[in-house]
Length: 448
Image 1 (cartoon, helix red, strand yellow):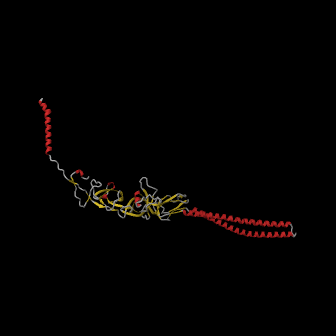
Image 2 (cartoon, rainbow, N blue to C red):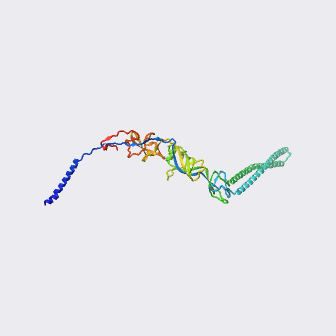
Image 3 (cartoon, rainbow, N blue to C red):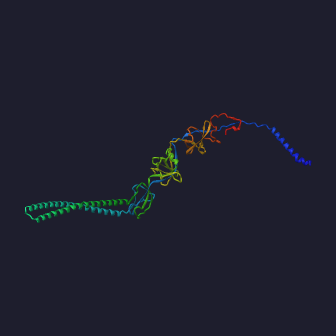
């Protein structure tokens, strides 16, 4: 009974008391920790001065495809059989302006011309005959007028004889009848003379109609010969020799190679900088489809050899922005395209863009994520948000006027990395004498 009581009550109490005594002895023997004084370390950074963008500006480079500026589809203007197809009239052949390509059968048109010439000669003969008739009629009218005068004098003499009772009434009637007959004859000749004028007008109109038809036949004969209208290259030929063509039938397609174009697409931002920093689509009261006439260099490399051409941004292609790519299709005109071929994939570089907006050149090592840069201002770190314009091989061109506070050229730009950068934290520029460390007894007072 006593052993059970000792085991259940006294033994656990003794063990607990011994443990409390050992813990109290350990606590009493431990010395209080000495608080160590730590020095606050100011991070050191490497800086370079912010510099303005190069005076020559920057370049915008896009890809494009060479296309002809003008492509002509020649069609038959007259009906006829193809009697000649020259060696130049094959797809892919280069031709000069005026080179003979096709020739239609000219014989039907030559027959028409001969027919119209014969009709014209007949009208000329009719006009000559009319002139002769007019001359004869004029003489007859003169004779008829003389006859009328003669009959009237005779009539007066008969009246005088009757007054002296030397002639009868029948003589008077006979004289009156002769005067009437002569006047009728004169009136008929005068009517003929007036009709000659209308006959002449009709023959002149017929002559002009035949001349116009003859001119048309001669023009058709000229159009039966198809020549190259431009210096270019044959793209496609749709007829063969001895085939029959009707007016409007397509014959061939030829592209003008004297001037080529490059089809490319530009971002609205690219057009903004090409316009010198102005909105390219804001032309109130001006041509809404005008485009900056920026110079361009077109290049194409093959087998390690690069060819270049000079061009100029000439026009928009279409009426607006491509809905799929959100870019603006444009055309670059190449006035001297020797060696530039249709379908070539080329590079287009717009150089020397120098807008009126201030631009800065930032080293790639100083350009931070989220379009940020770090500056040292009065011994403290300042974080600026910038708007990149162009990312180059070793630098980034940014706007100097925002989107935040303007960045003055010459400011100290941090190019070295920093752990946990915070705006306003103290920093020291590498190479400068550091300030005396500031001691702090309380770790909680250290700047984070």
